[in-house]
Length: 367
Image 1 (cartoon, rainbow, N blue to C red):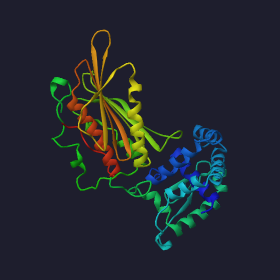
Image 2: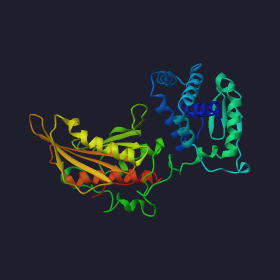
Image 3: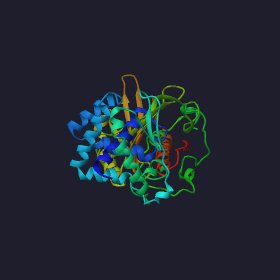
Image 4: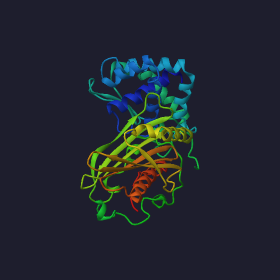
């Protein structure tokens, strides 16, 4: 595939995801192609401006053409970026006879779409002009087996996997799961992996939901996931969620970050731990002794006097393979329950591990 064809195809993937055209663009590979391209475009000012204009309105006249032109220029100027894009979609050679793709152009010229297998492109003048190039891409994919990457949801985004209810007194409700639930037993029969979590939906599912928490808890802030596009150091996504118990005085905050390799995650974990004291300058932190959770973990507690009484918090920073996370447990004026702090940290670690195993996270919190 030459550089023009590569730029046209990557643009079609980014456009499909941004506009919601096509029903199968949420795959690991498509999300990863978009993420790799966006990270590189966000690294220099000219490219970032083009990307920001595109994100402002992907369907605006010229937005898609400008993005494709800029992508082509960056691909030609940056061989490493071009190689990374190709590696992201690289698969073993498949026999041409095993591949069947369909091209469909909608009847409505204004709202129609060009669909190539699982990839759909809006029928804009720019897209129509690029149709010949995209057709060449399909033929190239038929030889190299690359089109099928958009269905490869069970593959890690890069390379191969590596072997790597609370008591009523604390206001948490009743225990929702038997002992051991939310531990590695929840992934029994699946080899633990240190794989890249590059799919947006799977990344968001790491965030504990209400089914993962003791009864009586509710959602205080909805889960979120954002892609990193600048100064990432290997970071792919940032995610988080905030939940609270029925009293409204106790809160569990889960934040996590996915990375493109174990090395990137390990380095990020160490930086985060080293800088953590500076993030809560108003609340003095004290190191805590907790059993290790995941591949690495560090725990702290804090006390804050608000003029009337003392409030308590606990924190666990952890790494599991390519994911690092922080579980924060705020117990208000009640003294910190370290057993539940550890349980919520294990919950986050288990769900991160399940995502790396290729499973939809389902672990629950339990003592």
